[in-house]
Length: 171
Image (cartoon, rainbow, N blue to C red):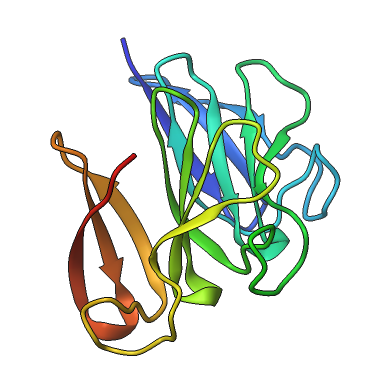
């Protein structure tokens, strides 16, 4: 039987429900809005891996936080250094994807780019956009979400330009 994960942005928490059951349990962000490791602020997007580890894009904290199954607090896996366009920063992160190696891919909405954060990295690298929020083929404006196909092509919801873009990247 599977699980359903729901992000409650009002309570700044993520709940997990067993499919078919009425009540869920809080699996991330138990203590309201804030910047401690047991808190989230703006958990709009999330990614769940096969081990039930949860990676949450805490948009208002400018960071991505990983919560392992049954964890009491999260671990910052990307961002967390405030607003700005340095490679250690990710203001207003939105969509994310985590691959089998633990690499985190983030739609860095505030900087009009997509970043890749290798497992345990202290900074990310830009893999798409990041060269101004405009409408040219190599630019993004407020990227909202992302995903990969089976061939490794990156698809980005380019919200500000009203399109979905495909990028051929080398992992």
